[in-house]
Length: 302
Figure 1 (cartoon, rainbow, N blue to C red):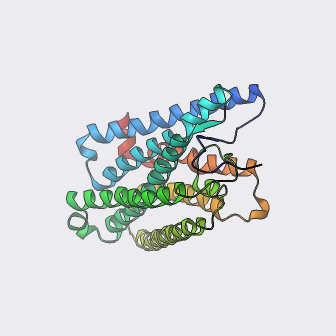
Figure 2 (figure 1 turned 30 degrees about the vertical axis):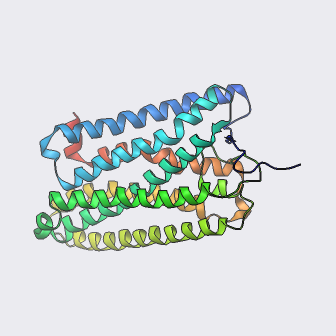
Figure 3 (figure 1 turned 45 degrees about the vertical axis):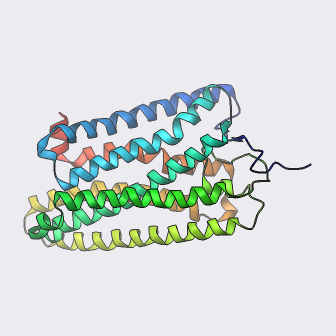
């Protein structure tokens, strides 16, 4: 039987969370609760930082950008999955799939680069406090945030153009609950997919470089904090660093497991669970992580 090529594909079929109707409705209710909690938590952080002039500092400026990215990340994938669950459908249009790939990659890459910038912010604040004002002025902060967003945009244009220019002749079933580049590449029947894998490897090398930078920054931070004579100073330093470290660890560990796990343990159900962990859970729990130990943010929220 002749398989469809990319020019004849008008829609893709996403992986369903469950086959039973009752379970589909249960997943819809569960993800609706997570989605609303993520919007509420990140919206509160956005509003709090924007309305309180005392929080107009580099750290909270980057946190505001992180909340924006989190709201975008979870809004790119979860609403369509919830709609499919409640309408008992798996379909997504070709254009909708391309849009999901574009925005999900753009927001995730921008968020990772922003987390790297936030590590630099904490490093300067703790290890070089006398130079904090000169190194992280309002103009420098705006430029670093713009670089994070701009890098995500440039990379996603490259990946989206490469992926959707490939001929797809192995069906239209995507083994994931949202459109993701590796699963779309599995549908390609051309050796040209190696070009996109090359681009992905280049992106992974950049991500690894950012990861090394974050680790080295925190080694220096913890060395500086442990040398502080004041217990109150150590507590304040940890209260601003640990939430960021927890967010980075959650984001990096789930994404690395998703993309680096051995093929022998890969399965559609495991891939589904892991994808939920790195695409749904971080945007929902980041506001909780940041508000738990941050006394200024908690006081302003109250």
